[in-house]
Length: 240
Length: 240
DNA sequence: CGAACCCTTGATACGCTTCAACAAGAGTGG
DNA sequence: CCACTCTTGTTGAAGCGTATCAAGGGTTCG
Image (cartoon, rainbow over all chains, first blue to last red; front, side, top):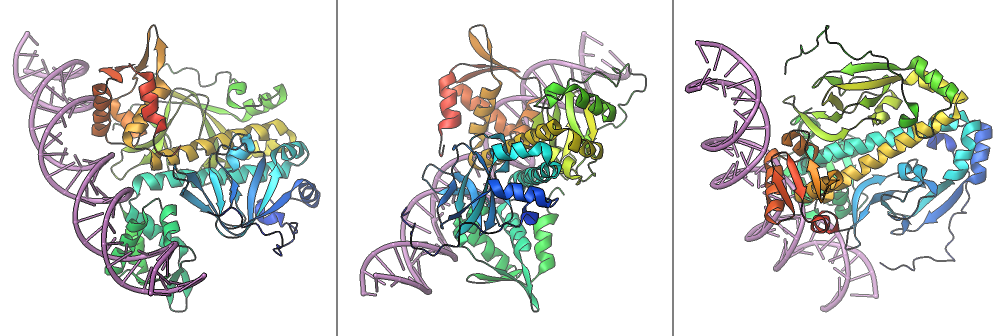
């Protein structure tokens, strides 16, 4: 992985763009708070494949994704990322560690060109007493993170690969004319990593779904043929 | 599972005992806040095996364990609890769901006789603006929950049963005279559930550790014979 | 064209669960 | 006191699910 993708000439978008705080903080911050946040916020553009932060590195800032997609996981011994989840724009990255000021518990890697927001935890903490809305917004974000993580753990424990794939397809399918499409914008091996399976296994799962007539696979475009069947396969199963 | 363990005559400890808020909330709350919390707090005693809250049930209260131990997980289709983790006194239960007011994401079951604290989320939210310390304490608790859940997910993904058992033993072993003891206060099948393995697998793992000379097993008393060996087996492994 | 990817497929291996059987202890009632 | 049963832990055998290894075909790019 070449570390020299940085190009000083690149007409990068100006590092400072107005931030729409309302999309990041649930009880949208009032003017005064937004202004205060603007003062301590930093923005950074990260090139594809580059690390946003690394596991073990002390977390001083709360990091959110403003644009692009980020992979959150842990690097295995071989340096490859064992993905746990994928974080899209408007979400926070490893908020728990950041707020505690601990070392980051995970590695964050930009999947495409990504713009991230960095908010120093110290500064934020200082704002807390005067800005009640801020606390609520942070609490809500943190609570959501906890829920997502809990669900993730359960899925890993109780759903086999086929079910996770079906789930994933259902979450991603978009209506397009008559039928449901699932456009794949990433490499299948990355999807496999997100689902915590080997790439070969994902391939086999998709083939199986295809053979059952539930989906049609044409390269990077998947069509859902039998929504009900897929749902039955995904959620119905044991427990729940 | 008999649902009629409730005994109206039981000389239950008086449902209201003074609460040591400092052990529950990290920046210990000042007097005024503690008093306010006392006013909205409720306490409840739950008998062994009884449910504290159930998955899907709307969460109105933030629940913490004051005394005893609680199993947090999901009931499978057969009604048995697929344990995800075990929560001891002084910790919160499914704080994320509770704060959001969502349905609980997990079932909580008392493992022994348990005393729980219930704090209405609405009332708490009302206190937020006037009590900056409260927000910080909740944020910290929530952040810790997120971290625990993230670690848990990673362990499930990347550590096999043997490693999880070794980990668990290391977390539990206590110095006793010359050597390290791990007293088991619960049924082994419950331990197995906590480790997300079948009881038979736990049995086999323990036997294997015994055959390697790392531990000695005598019923419900395990002795760690080779701490270094156990550590090597637990953490060293692939990745990390 | 070859090189470097990526996805797919097959064969094989391993870990864990499941099922079934059994021994050991606790509680119960004759 | 002894059967009887229930529960728990252990062990073995079989099977499922997934990873791993190896090979092949399809692109894209130089």
